[in-house]
Structures are given as structure tokens and as C-alpha cells.
Amino acid sequence: MERWHPVSVLSDLHRGEVAGVRIDGHEVVLWREDTDSATLHAWEDRCPHRGMRLSFGFVREGALGCLYHGWQFGGTARCRLIPAHPNVRVPAAIQVRTHMVREHAGLAWVGMEGAGAFPATMPVPWPVVQPVRSVHVSAGAGLLRHALGMHADVAMTWRGPVGLAVHAPVAGQAMLHVVRARDAQAPSPLVLSRWAERLRDGVEGGGDTTRIMGELA
Amino acid sequence: MSDALVLHDWTPDVRCYAVRLGLSLMGLPFATRAVDMDLAPGQRPAGLESGLCPPVLQAGRTRLSRPCTILLFAARQPGVAPTWLDPVQGWVVMDWLDFGATALDTLATLRTAAFGTTLPVLPGTVPLEALLRRMEDHMAARALAGEAWFAAPAPSIADVVLFVVFALSADLGVERDTCPALRRWARGLRRLPGFVVMPGVPDYA
Ligand code: FES
Image (cartoon, helix red, strand yellow):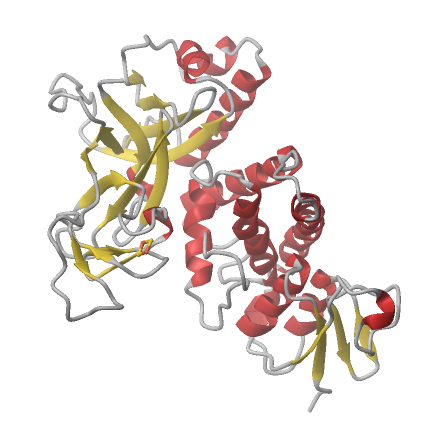
């Protein structure tokens, strides 16, 4: 799908953290540098050496280290150190495939191959947005979007001070990402977390979720 | 000085790993007697009467055979930081420990079913996914409340048992990108002094 996918709330991606996500079946590793810039990266979740998932790795000194044999990949996605051969200059060709990534509305967005520039037309109606939680829903993303009243081509919707975004890790599965305006009128993060669980259970149960959505009104 | 601790241990068993991990995190020295449960009972090294399965902890005349009871016993030993069985949150720790005991048994049963056959067929992981979901919902709420551990302000023996459940469920093909709160919590546990890995299992968590 040629578009940007909301894949995680930013509160699950602090400095020095690594997370594996899937986007329509593609495995992607998200990691944030432990440096002052704290840059967020989204790469293919596969080590060029032996194919280990990089999301099992660790961030150290601005690089993502593979768990298997410790190859280190810096912010440019090029391999910068092979621990077994510390004095060898690493060939430039050894690098991880990268994806585009953006931080927007309390969420990490990944642009897969073919995605255009990040849409400037994705307004956030609130000055300060706070991530709440990403919740797994064992049902197709289409069903979840339907429950949320979202069109298939819309990535995010707002119900007053509550922002809701959906992505499909694999067919038949969905992740619901919840953010809120940092505003006295908005439901608390904990209340929204419990609400998201009820919605998840409702969507998975196949029942009518209108009443649960109505709780946000 | 309390009696020396002797653990009858079967390396690949998840319940034994929970005990080894807990004793190591709590800084309790113990001696290991390896028991190979794959051998016929008559061929196993002496020391464990028939009918008993590892983990079994021997401390003087006390002999304990359930992993969570062993961890409770360990957390009460002199010299162990009281936070492992937080005095204020003790009941909450026990509640999650009880949950963890069931979850550990579920995990052990599924692993036996998965790896005890030459067929590359993974058993249904639905029971495990239901347990992990309850854990994920709980830890998501804890994180929103500014807490990093299951039951108390510091890591407790409940975190030890539940870590094993989460970390080794990957072996059965349960996906972890659906459990972001557990992922962050498990990374925190791995950073604790005394953390040990399960041999033969990649460091997934
Ligand atoms: S597979 Fe990554 S370093 Fe070998």
C-alpha cells in the first residue's frame, strides 16, 4: 500500500529503545538513537549478515547492534563495526534497507516503498498531543476502521480530544493507536486505555460497538 | 547462616529457568544438581526420589518442588532485598505470582507439545495469548501510572516468573510486536544485575 502507516505511539519509542513492528506483513525495526539528537529510524528488520531480526538487538553509542554476531549499524544504516574483525574497514555495500519515518501527532509513521512525501494535509487539531497506548486487535483492520467510522484511505481520525489511528501488521490483525490532547477536558490516559480494551473486545466479539464509540462523545 | 541451597535442575525446563533466574537476581548462591528428565528414571543421577520433577530446592530439611513457592522461600532468606516480596504490596505480588504459576505451567505444557514431536507443528497458542493479553493490559496501565513493574515500585518475584512466560513464548511463535508494554518491561528486567539467559534460546525479549 503506497502510503504512510502509523505504527506505534511515541511513548513506546524512548531514547535507546528498539521495537519490531510489522506493516502488511513486512517486518520493520524502529529504533531511537541514544545520542543528543535521539533520531528515530525505521529499517527492514533483517540483519544483512545472517538475517537475524535487528529488533532483538541493542542500541549503543548511536548504533543498532545485532544480537547474533554484534555487527553495528550507525544512523546511515551502513555497517560500521564487525566485532570479529575490529580492524577491517567495513565495505560500504553492507547496509540495511531503510524506510522513511516521521514523528507526528504522538505517533511514529513509516513510509514504505512507493510512499510519497509525508502528507502535509494531516492536521492535528490540538496544540499538544500526548501518546496513550497501542493496542493489538485480533480482527482485520477493515473491521476496526469500520467501528471507528474511518474511511479506508484515512490513516487517523479525531473524536474531540482523542486521536485514533489504525495499521495492519498482517492480514486479519490490527493495531489501534490512541493519543489524546493534553487538555483538561480530555479523558485521562488510563480511562482511554481501558476504553481501547473495551473497543478491542467489542470488535473481536463482532458485536455492535456504537455504544462504546459513543463513550467518547 | 542458613542451610546451603541445592537446586535439582533440568536445564531446558522453563520452571527451572524461572527458579535459576530468580535466585540469581536475588543474589542467592546455590549448588546445582543436574537431572536429565529425558533419561529413564533408573538412569538418572541419585538425589531426587521418583515422582519428583525439577525444579526441586533442598534447603536443609526443607524440600520444595513448585517454582513460585521456591521463589517465595528465596525472597525470605536473610540478605535478600525485601523488595523482591515487597512488604507493602505483598498480596499483589502473591496474586500475580499465582497467575504466573498457571501461566508457567501452560507454557511448559505447550513447549513439551511443540518440541516433543518431530513434526514441525506448533500447538495452539490461544491459551498463552489470552494470558499475555491480560499481562499487556496490566503493564500498559502500570506504565501510564508511571510504574515499571507488575506489582510494586521495584521488581518482585512476580516479575521474574512473568518474564519467563513472556520471553519464552516467542519460542512458540507468539508475536511480540502486539505486546509493546511487555516488551518495554522485559527489556528493563534484562538490565537488572544478576540477569541470566535461558541456554539454547535466543535472547528474544
Ligand atoms: S546475523 Fe546480524 S551480526 Fe550476524
